[in-house]
Length: 136
Image 1 (cartoon, helix red, strand yellow):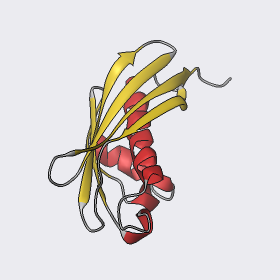
Image 2: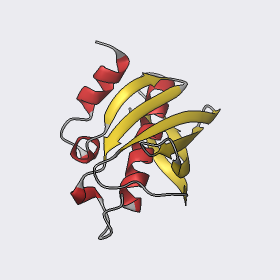
Image 3: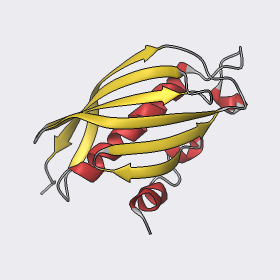
């Protein structure tokens, strides 16, 4: 089983699965995923809701951090900034690509680009993840 499939299995039963996030590629240098824009993920205008975009990006940055940190360590998002650029209509599919900006011993910074089906930028999200030592 490849790394994307392994991580996808770990996401069963929690928010990423409820949103419908499908991991396509997972490496320590890139996380690629898709999300179908369903009615329950939209605003009243049938456009992907900003909170869905943020949860999508947060998931991808966290996944990238998890596969980059030492075994036994944990992580949590300590900061996130989203620039909303464009929209994604109900029925379409958006793609998220997260790449590391900084991978330190105690923090990692990931930037996620969310694009619509036409390849146009929907949002740009930058988040900081703390790397937590193993619990004793």
